[in-house]
Image (cartoon, rainbow, N blue to C red; front, side, top):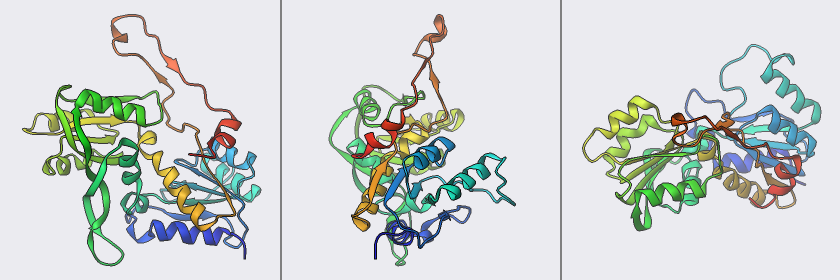
Length: 301
């Protein structure tokens, strides 16, 4: 029997067990027939209309995303509403949708492992350990703690992060002494300011995450021995996971064509250079990728 939606889902749920998802989360198969054959798979962070359009135009049978389409409860999916339109577009085109969210965050390897690997951080343990499917702790959980092969100044480490992740208008921000030596590092893909305390308790030199807010970051930095902070765009912090998920599907469905989307789904589209407030604003924008860039150009993530 050839590759099907069901066989792809089985492989993804083995890698990212649904039992690891938070109670409030909505993971798994969103729409699609488990018995339908799968020849093309697209992996992305977000199931935005643009990503769905890419999938449909590319003849994709299964779209796998990190973020759920229907995270909050709905009473209907009318086609004249944004999310309903996405559901109708997927069903009409015969494209299934699967989401692995907080279960992919907590799995080992998971989202933060992919982020750490992209940054050259050697993982030691979870930042927030959880009980795994087998009842043991210490191998799964949100975030990761690791180390660099050799210490480097914080300024060089921020440049390392910027070079390793896909470019966004948000860019990469660092908070800390540029000369501080960085060796032990904590990472958490996605919004991670709820774990600032865990990063301090871990005794790391720097903590990399996304969506850091002003007050929690400021209060964190005022504490003795607080790790330096690196704030990146939410989408960029989770994009490395797409290659990891693609590898999972390729191993399970060797006959399928599995592609990682390069479409930037970070909602911010404009950025201004440092110091622009002292002179005329000169915002810059990055043009969205073409269809060729998104589907054909990403065959090797």
